[in-house]
Each structure stands twice: as C-alpha cells, then as structure tokens.
Image 1 (spheres, rainbow, N blue to C red):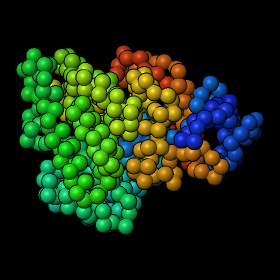
Image 2 (tube, helix red, strand yellow):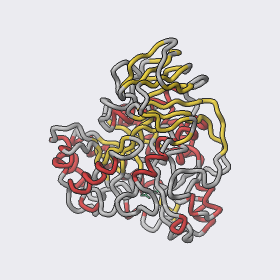
Image 3 (cartoon, helix red, strand yellow):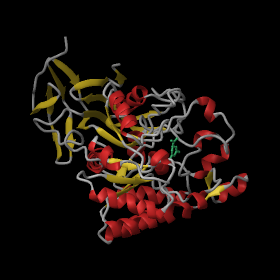
Image 4 (tube, rainbow, N blue to C red):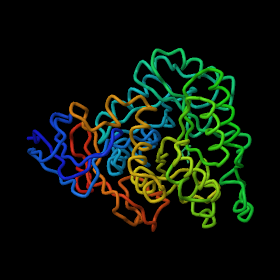
Length: 428
Ligand code: DOR
C-alpha cells in the first residue's frame, strides 16, 4: 500500500520567494505542511540539501513516436527525473511530426505513464516543412502552449508573421519558439564556421545563420505583439540582439543549453560526432557571452536540447552524423559548475522561469507552499561528480561531458507527490 504521507527532512527550501530551513510534508500529491520538525509515514533525508521546485525543461527530444530505438517517452522521462526535472516539453520533430491533434494526443497519452509530466509541444508548420501552418487553434485547445519547428527554423518570414498573428488571436497564451537558423546561410555546415572548420576542412555554419533569424523574429515580434522564445542561443551576436530587444521593451524569452555554456568548437578537432550539434559549438568568446547572458538573465532559461541518437547513428563520419547531445541528466551539474550565480538564480532559469514561459505555473516551478502540487527536487548543490561513459538512463549514449567534473547532484525527485528518484536512483 502506498505511504500516506511523505516528509523531506533537514533541508533548506529554496524557491522564488526566498530560502529557509524547513521540512516539507506531502500528502495526496500536494504539499501539506512546510516547517520545522515535521513527521510523515515515509521519511526522505534532505540533510545538507536544497529542496526546490522541480526543474522544467522547455526542450527535450523524446523521440516517440518514430525513433524508439534512440529514446522513448519513458526512458527520456527517467533521464529527466534523474536530472531533477519534474516536467519536460516534448519537441515535435517525431515521426510522424507532432503537427496534428491525433499525434499530440498520442504523445500526451504516453506522457501520462511517464516518470514526470510530459507536455507536448506542436509544430508551427505541417510536417515542419515550412509551407503551411498547423491547426494551431485546435492544438492550443488541446493544451499545447509552445509551438516550434525545432530542428529547423521557419524560413519564410511571411509565414512566420502569420503564425505570430494566429498566436496573438488565440484564447490561450501560447509562445512561438524558434530554432534560429537561416537554412541558406547554414547550408552544408556540419560545425561552426571559423578557425577549426578551416583547419579540419569541414564546411561551417557562420554566426550570421543564427543571428539573421534572431533579428528577423525580433522585428516580427515587435510588429505583431506575439510572445516569442529563442531556442538554444549560441552566439555573442544573438545575445546582444536579445539584450537590445529587451531594453526596447519587447517581451521575449531566450534559452541557453548546457553545452553552449561549456564546450567550444575546438572539441570538434577529435572529429568525434558526439560533439556535433545544431546550432554548433562556437568560439570561446561565444561561450563567454552565452554564460554572461545567462548570468544577467538576457537568456532567462536554461534548456537541455536533450537529443538522443543511437550509437550506430553517431558512428557515422562527422559530416554525416546526426546533430544532438544528451542533456537532461547533466544540465544542473553543468549550470552549477560554470555559472557564477547564486543557487536560487540558477534554479530560476531551470525551474520557475521556464514554467512561466510554457504556461505551467499552476503545477510547476513552485513556490514550495501548502496546497501546491508536490513537484520537487532535492539537490546537494556542492557535490562534485565526474561523468562516466555510458552513465545515463537514455537508450542512447551521446554524452559530450565524459571525464568532466560537474557540480550539484540530485538526491531525490518527487513528481505529483510520488518519490520517483530516491538517493539518486530511479524508482521505476
Ligand atoms: O542538435 C540538434 N539536434 N539540434 C536540433 O535542433 C535538433 C536536435 C535533434 O532532434 O536531434
């Protein structure tokens, strides 16, 4: 029989309202008490740890339907909870594409059996082909709050303008998330265009392939009033464009990935396809600008872009290998290792800010208060650990951090009141 109440003892609660030492009692999926010396039927030790709202990922490729050999909604959600996430937004570049009510319903149904909350996004254009808008109104009625053609950007500015106009007219508050990549400028580029692409003799993608679309969409968002979210920002120029748009008063959000905060194009010297990703790993100056952008909240969200690919796919030569890296189990560890920010600010970018962008604040992102749904993570923020090869719950193995020391470990994760990770182990 399930335990009636769960208590997290001896931790420090950190949420958007501040920080205080407190035990947290959970009953029937909700927080029932927060305070000193509380009891419960089942006790989880949070001593030396932070008890925080669960992390929320705006950008996870769960590969189902269509690529179940690389990941399933279940295995991806296991990676998520091991990384402290209690909710993920599933990207729509599945097969078939999440561009219809039927496919989004299928993903939502599979998500209900996952270890964390799975919120389907949907494509902006049918089959992500860039020609025709999806039935955005029907999809929003179904609960979709984030639309994206991620994997590719919407190339046609007129179509993107219409998507924004449709979004503004919907009765629901939706966000248009853009994979900013001008396909013509980026054509054939397997890595960043710069010193290392020249040395390796590989075709590169220039900075401008990203920045041209960031600039276009800032102009379109200004014109239409639509809420826009810039995915995986990777260049100093993009960060500067977003900072200026913010200063001009535009309501825009933007994300940085763990890998763009840590790794540079010099990694590609190994020609190991684990370092192939879109947008590509950039220069040291870009990494510094992305970190600075996260620190000053120009980039207000950290999102994983968890992109599993099978060992066979990643065994192809670098130019032909698919782009993408695992991220869900490493995002917090990278963020705490590289960012010069108080823990609460890191949690803001990994939890309550993304929850707000995706319209999930009723259930995700805290505060840790009586009556709220119990979606929580318990983190040891100072624990250091070294990433081992193959150390993932993913069906894929494309970890770009092997051998690196990260900071901050997830001890427990509680989803809708259920402890799904206990002492660092997934419970199913
Ligand atoms: O590296 C990437 N992989 N970037 C994307 O935008 C798509 C993703 C994937 O689906 O593998």
